[in-house]
Amino acid sequence: MCGIVGYVGSRQAQNVIIEGLEKLEYRGYDSSGIAVVHENSINTAKFKGRLSVLDNFTKENPITGNVGIGHTRWATHGAPSDINSHPHLNNKETIAVVHNGIIENYLTLKEELQSKGYQFVSETDTEVIAHIVDYYYEGDLMEAVFKAIKKLKGAYALGVIAKDSPGEMIAVRKESPLIVGLSEDGNYIASDVPAILNYTRDVYFLDNGEVVRLKPSGVEIFDFDKNPVDKEVHTVEWSVEAATKGGYEHFMLKEVYEQPQAIKETLTRRIDEDGYIKLDDIKLSAEDLNSINKIYIVACGTAYHAGKIGKLAIEKLAKIPVETDIASEFRYSDPFVDKNTLLILVSQSGETADTLAALREAKRKGARVLSITNVVGSSIARESDDVFYTWAGPEVAVASTKAYTTQLIAFYMVALNMAIKKGTITKELYFEVLDEMKTLSSKVESLLENVDAEKSIAERIKDKSSLFYLGRGADYQTALEGSLKLKEISYIFTEAFAAGELKHGTIALIEEGTPVVAIATQKDLVGKMISNIKEVKARGAYVYAIATEGETEIKKVADEVIYIPETLDILKPVLSVIPTQLIAYYTSLAKGIDVDKPRNLAKSVTVE
Image 1 (cartoon, one colour):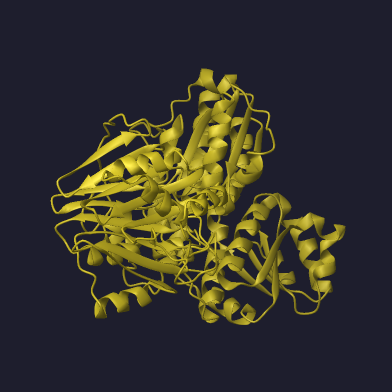
Image 2: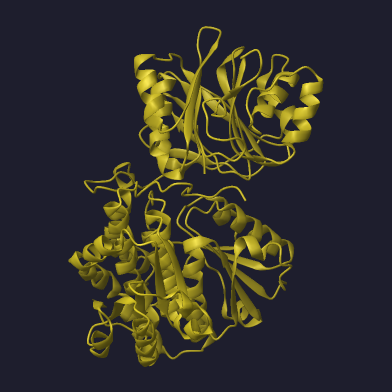
C-alpha cells in the first residue's frame, strides 16, 4: 500500500524522491515524508495529508543532499499524523528508516528497547526498526541492518540511511515489494516501477530475503545469510507516458478507454501462425491436465470476480471441477490441495499479500501454481510454475478496470487451451469462441462511443443511500464486480444479489424508489430475469437494465435499458461490465469524490 522511494547519486535527492512519490500516489496514503543526509546531519520533513503539503514545504525550504529516502504512508499502527509519518529516526537523529509492511512483534521489541533507555515518540511499529539499527550500529550500516532484521518478524520493505554513512543506503525486502533502479547518475529503490521511470528503465526485482547496499558507484545484493546474489537486470518496456493521464481527467477514465487496446494486445500477441492460442509461459501438457482432478482459483476483490468468470469458462470448456475462494479465507481453511491440484492465482500487481500467502501454502502441499498477473517480475509471477501476463499496461486508478477485462480474456484463453489439449471441445467450437473473442475489442470500443446513458444514471443515483445489482449465472458475477466498483469510488452502499435468491429474504430491502441495476444478457436466463425485474418493480424499484441488442422484452419491464453488442454468452461479461464501470465513474465524479484515490483504499494491498 505505502510507497517508498530512495536515491543515492549525484542528483539532488529531494527532487528525485518527491517526483517518485507523486508517481506512487495511486497506492493510497494519508501522510508523506522525506529524509536526506547532508553535511553530517539528517534533515527531515513529514506531514499528514496529501503529498502536495510536503512538496510545497520543501520548495520553500529545500532539503539539499544526494542521499535520501521518502515515503507515503497508509496508516496501520497509529492514526495519520505528522509524528506517525515516515521516515522514522533514532533518538540521536543519526539514522532514518522508511518501511512498508507490518512488524508483528513490534510491541515486544519496543519493551526491550525501552528497557535499554530508548524513547519512542510515535505509535508506529516502524520506529522500533530505527532504534534497533541504532542499537547495533558500530560504524557499518549494513552490518547493523543485518543484525536488526534477525529480530524482526512480519513483512517489510526497508530503506535505511545514516548520518555517519553519507554515501550509501541499505534496502531490505521481505514479503513487501521493492525494486532497485540502476543509472549512471545514481541508484534508486522504489515500491513500484513508475516511481523511477523518468530516470531509468533498468531494474532489479528483489526477491524475498534480500539486502541491498546502494552507493553512487554501484549496487551489491546479498541474501539474509550475507551471501552475494547475482540478479538479472530487467529493462522496463512501457513508457512514462503510459503511466500518466494522457489528457483524461482521471486515470480511471483513461484506463476504461484503454480497454479495447489492452484486450487486443492480451489476445492477439498469443495467436500463432496457424491461428491457435500459444501460451509460452504455461507449460501444462495434455498429460499434466489429465492428472489434475481439481482446480482452485484464488484471488481478492476484483481479481476474485474475474476468477468467478474463469470458473465458468474452465468448467464449460475444459470440463475440470473448479472452486473459487477468497485468498484471505483459502489460506486458513486447510483446503484439500495436493500434487493433483492446480492453483490459479489472479492479482493485478502480483504482490497481493493474501494471494501470495495462498501460493506458498499451496506449493507447500505440492500443488502446481499458475498465476494471472499484470506485472512482469512480481513476486507471484516469480514464484509460480506457470504465468499468464495480461499486458494491460500500468493501471494506476485504485478502481480496477482494464486489469479486470484482460483477466477475463486470460481465463478464456487458458480455458480454451486446456480444452483443446484435453479434447473436451471440437476444433469447430474452439475456433468459434476464439474468432468471437477477436471481435470483443471493437465491441468494447463501440460501448465507449456514447456514454450519455451512464452519465444520466449517475446524476439520478448520486444522492441515493443504497443501490442493488441483480443477475443470474455469468451476469451475477458481473453484478458483483459492478457493485464493488460503485461502492469503492462513490461510497454508496451497494450489494449484488443472485436474482433467484430475491424471495429468500433480500427482496425485503426493496422499497419505493430503490434503484436496481439488472444485468440480463444470458439467453437462457433472460426470461427468469424478466420475472425478477417484475418482482422488484412491484415493490417500487426503479430498474436500469443491461441487456443484449435485440432483446426487446426487457424494454417492456425495465425503466431504462443499456444495450451491449451481441456475442457468445460465455464472453458477454467482457461487455456487460463496461456500463457498470462507467456508471461508477460518473457517479463518483458527480459527487465530487477523488475518483482515483477513494478513501481508505490502496491500489496494491501488500499487507494482510
